[in-house]
Every structure is written in structure tokens, then in C-alpha cells.
Length: 115
Image 1 (cartoon, helix red, strand yellow):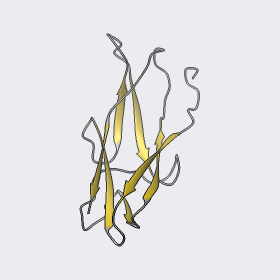
Image 2: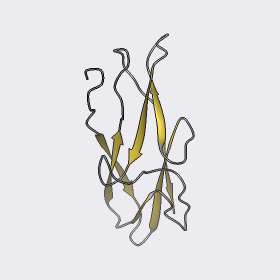
Image 3: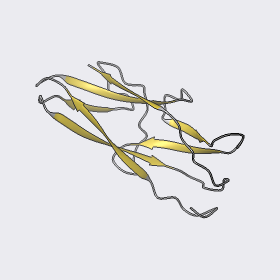
């Protein structure tokens, strides 16, 4: 992506399988520990650049997806009810700026399923 260009949101799918009737809430926690789903991707080697990102639900500009949910409250997570099959939940990631050195940037996000 060219420096300063608008970055299109990325997305992936989280699949949850729970027994029929089991209510659950999904929380996401970037390696930064931010319970509001704000993280930073780091480059490789000695590259000091980082790319800030925001985890979101519904769309690339939708509500944040973080990790304030509990087994009894959805908080800023996503909820569902098991049906015995794998259920898909789409995660979107928005990146406000792309003005960094060319590199491979990554981060680890923990997925918590609370039921």
C-alpha cells in the first residue's frame, strides 16, 4: 500500500462450535492487552515501525470488538447461541495509516469464548 493511502479494512472468520442452546460471548485481545481491541502490528528485525489497528465487528467501520465480555455479559464482544454446528463470526480490522517502511507486519490476537 502506498504511503498515506487509505487502507481497506481486512477481515477474517472466527468459527465457534457449541452445543445447541449454549449462549456464548466472544472477546478479542491484541498482544497490547487493550480490552478495547486496539493493537499494533510490528515489523521484522530491527524495523522500529508499527502499524496501529482496530478490531471491529459488523464492518470495517463498525463498532469495536474487544474483550470486556464475560460469560453473562456481551460487553464490547460478540454474542451467539450454539446450534451444535460451526458458526461463523466475521472480524474486521481497520488501519488508519499506512506510512511505514515496507516489511511484513504482524500481531497475535487472543480469542476468548466465554459461556
